[in-house]
Image (tube, rainbow, N blue to C red; front, top):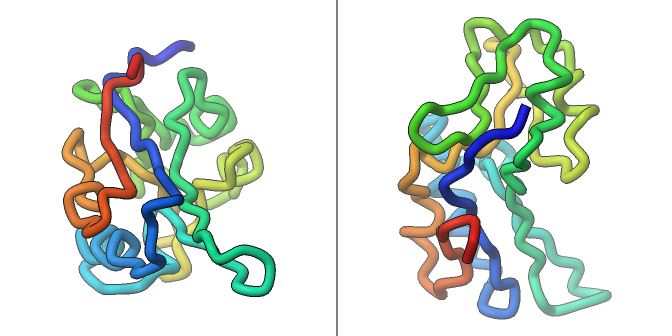
Length: 144
């Protein structure tokens, strides 16, 4: 199954200052609390190896392995953006999608909801992109 994705987030790690505003905003928008562990993107940095932070975002795969791996049909495609999203009500938290994701950008919620979570591009208006003070995140057309 090939999705017709309308956009994706592109990261420019060279502009990132490791402020983690994007992670905080993401978790606040999606989970109602500030918790980098619940963000749908990650900022990683090893100060002993490299001073440039690494921004890791969901690739929004055209043929999403997470969707194909889900035995509960809990991952669907957003009609507007074409982006895979998790239906928490249907998710059985088996972890098949987590294992299938090559970029490691789908995870299981660490709470009683017992469901997977991933970036859904905030319905086409990614709040991490809006909130980045350095412009290190760009939301653009897939062809750009």
